[in-house]
Amino acid sequence: MKRGYYFGLAATGLLITSMAAFGFTGQEYSKDAMVSLEEARATALEAHPGKIIDQELEKETGGSGLRYSFDIATNRGTQEVGVDAQTGSVLENSAEGPNPD
Image (cartoon, rainbow, N blue to C red):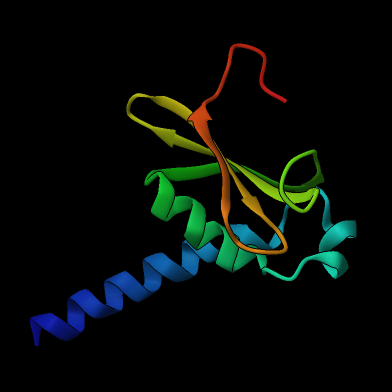
């Protein structure tokens, strides 16, 4: 019985978290991305666990030239994780500087 309850809580949390995934800057580039926003979010959170507080799809040098950029809040500060929108590889995983993009 408890297992079903905890599974339900986890599913609800996942649903609430994924609802924020629908809005992001750079949606006009989505048609050119081979990796979905949801896949990129999962990759970013695997690279650096925390809470995504900002997300965008942007043209940027490095990798294929199209990347998802995520700001992830942790108890140590904000981490920026970039995921290539064509290959899904992590291009950046560094502390957000004093002058964020």
